[in-house]
Picture 1: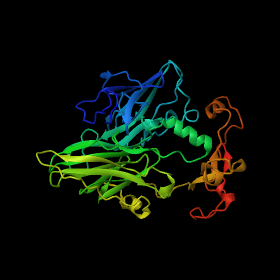
Picture 2 (picture 1 turned 135 degrees about the vertical axis):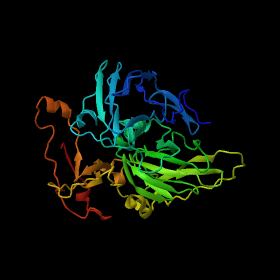
Picture 3 (picture 1 turned 45 degrees about the vertical axis):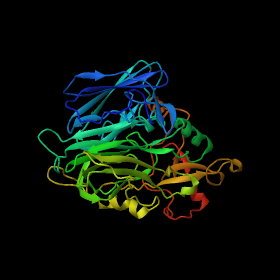
Length: 451
């Protein structure tokens, strides 16, 4: 039996009104509350929560939660509204808690991002308020923790409805359901991260993929003939995922807080941090049908570089009937099918109508070329756990970030020179075939700089 605390089930029902949300994070005896409210409505309702004990895969551990929920609570708003978040720290210093993934923050990005670079940690016993203006976003976004790997369990949906006086650019669905895809480690997630950093190896693969916090027990009840808007979020830390529903097609109508022209597919590929708005028509014979997700990866499956499991949930039609047994899995491409992985993204087009314009600048004044790569550093006596005894690293334009001995923000405020640079190259300083399978060793090792 898979269980959590007494508050383990996230509330996915649509709200009848918007309320202030008080979200509290207890980090091993300390607390930090996040207060969400709309600027125009100040009703308050909230609970104090703490680390919760959850059981998955017959193994129990404490995880960091918000309001005792995993996944965390959903934030509801309308386009054009402003959300205010107030952070309240407890006895222990905690870095900024959440990021609003996909929310534009024009001219005020310094209140969102990694600790010590974009913003200092919130001091014990203090408060910090953040303003989030939903100016252009409409659709599905999400929030998540920003510190270490805590976002593995600290995350939830942000649903932005059309502003007053407007409507969806498609027939209004009968109901809306967040579908949050994630990962589960039996071990403590930050211990997994620390081990990878210490050894230079790829992090251990998760033990299971999840759908709405469950490895296989979530059920979505539907009525025959109705249409449902699935707000699908990939909250997995690492994995791109194939997702499909047996004998049902899905019509993509939005992604990452923007609407798209309708695109109907048997499956979708959703990358970490990405969201899709998908219409599901309950038009099949009343029965139980699997929805399923599995990893897309070009790494060898036998080397345990990724979670090679398939997570399932059940779409069950309401009514009186005997469900089929056994249920058949939906079609999902082979784990390393790259052509299949890009079919959905390649078919997406902006809606770009009068109500949802897409004004893309056609004559940019500056062109930037960034190459993002995975690299390896040599270790003494090949002592690291990466390929051939090396240490994994990441780079942009063949530059890997070197952590300074002084915080970047501290150096900025006190005008300490030599801690960071502000002249990051707009094009790669070293040009070679970035896509070839065989790269000379001197190109595999990036420079370490603080830019």
